[in-house]
Image (cartoon, rainbow, N blue to C red):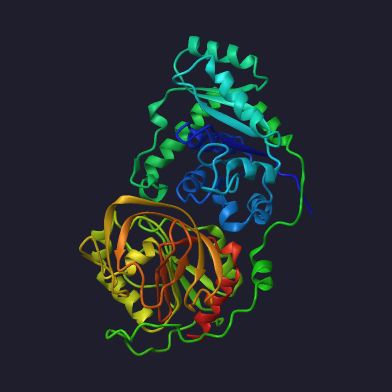
Length: 480
């Protein structure tokens, strides 16, 4: 199979240079021309893809070489970009920054090479003039396999400033494809974990994306950028498909008792049969809404391919789980911001606890772990896990190599996966009698909880790297 989607990678020398503004603005500007634009984000970030989706009307997708492996980058890209006229890939951090201690792994540069895509460097020019040429020359020459094919100058102060920058860059051999002046209206609010997600400020986010598109249209050479994207050579190989991934994954072992399981919870309620959908499929309820915005699109696709009916619910608004729920997935987000509202929805908290204590499979990552706790910052949560959660001053951030410690609804003990942690909360205790994962770095430890059908952990994982996770989860839905 030949993949010939025109594509650009939007990179920068460092974080804070304006990648998100430029990438999102380009997506929206090209979409307004009637092009089908496929949005992508390098790395594990969940928030930027929400703005990308708003700009393009398509699902924002991540390309993470650490979580998924280098071999899946091109197939996942082709899957997301199928049928599109153009793909725009927003980078992460600085162009050559990747996983700590792993060289170029998971860097924007590595992804650009895997996609054979031209790179456009977004440079914050607010405090420099002629030095910009040295900076661009350094980035363009550092790795000959990375094609830095254009520059967009951001935060330019005046016409005279622009003139000096262009004169300097004439000597670099890298063309200027855009100049953006300082514009506060394109800013988006941030808090303890980065930008505020689209789901929490939809109307304002629409305005922000429109402002980004307007600024990019006025300041960038869209025809030149499109021609550059079309210069990307074809890629060979097949697109990733959830159905094929699930079929080719190892068959899930039959459910077994949890290794090292904790004593029965005194609040455990005898299991009662749960309804099925008319066609015999189990409903897998997936938490969404403003408090639970972190998820990878491939997870729902894999669950569907494994035979589940995926239904989204909002723990801030819905008082009951979807009809026929046989399994529950609660991903990441900001429950700490909405703790009072989540706590006030007592009917749903009780429904979640009843489902979990009845033995149904529950997969909870980070925010999901907090929601299943006894309390979060003093606010009662679902009480499925006998842990207390609270905000912390310390940011926990980084990639993790992990191995499943206990048999669970997601994996058998010994299964290896890579994950990512990103939170400013702590839970006490940090692990149960049957931990979820053993983590190798930055220090050796166990973390998370396996309890009946519950698998709860701070670790964010990408199931495309281990599609058997989704298959096992749905099988457990059928047998629990």
